[in-house]
Length: 446
Image (cartoon, rainbow, N blue to C red; front, side, top):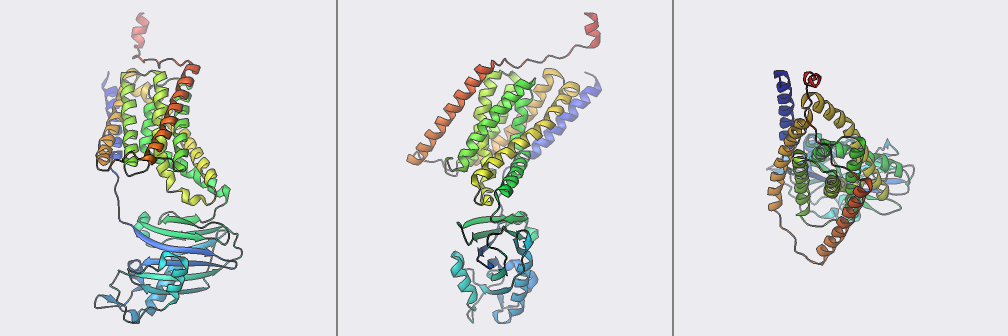
């Protein structure tokens, strides 16, 4: 191996190691700022009722006396707060921003519980604050009731918030949507979510969830590393299609089951899934190193795909609130988006691997080095996630958990049987072991 080849190998290995090391990080949890609200639609009006923490209104400059808000001198600051809310929490009808016809507001104590229902909240806001109420600076609420004229209660209504942009996604706006007709529902909107439809059409929901699916697979680094582990040693369209199809069928099965609440419950299950996903990367990487049997690979791909489906479901779970009344359509669209994203990723991965294994890390050596780098990243993930798993309490085997266990055991049995039948039907052969190419001079000598 000449110095140029050695330098190329070293450069690729160093770049991949740096990438994998930057990816293997534990999850962090941050404190959130929460703004509670109701959006109620009536025949001619829409109502926005909001409760926001007082510390979000620094620019309103509430007067302070002895460490407390000076309630009697706060009228001007309250008006500025209402004007700010109208600009920073916007209601849209068919994409058109609405302008409030009236706005009333008041301050509230941190202990106030009036926002448990829409009726309580509106009654509370219409009642002036009692004289002598003491609110410590930044520890109370600004409550507001905004009324908007609308053209039709059957229009598509949306919400956009730009409150405290410096907090980003740590600011959450909870919206309890109360339509004139239909069921009410709760939605949590993050600061960076942009415009969110409260009652989307089926087409709008479908296109949105396709985009979410694409973003989820492209941003799911552990899923991408597993996919790369799957395809590194494979040659030929038939082998690639078989393995990728097995992965797709398997993760679709558990993704759909999870969306309907059929997953095991408890704090132990998410870290368990994350740990097994990391384990799947390590296992597949080591199998690439020691040699691949295609029949075993299809079976294991399907089994690990079931676990990855649970991982996909965690990305979907927070987003299903935006589906409106189109749960099935959104679920199917999310899965379609994952497959589109998977095709996009493969369209980049396959040429990259072809170039690397042909010109930089040729033959069997390339498969071993690439797989070892991926195993290194997966091992770090697995170690961190095992520590997280050890810190949670495992469930007792009660009737609910036993039924869930039996359901998924039956699903695994069916999946394994389907994989075995598919392998027998396709008569797949073991993936060929690549050998280093002989030089042109050596071949001429023969």
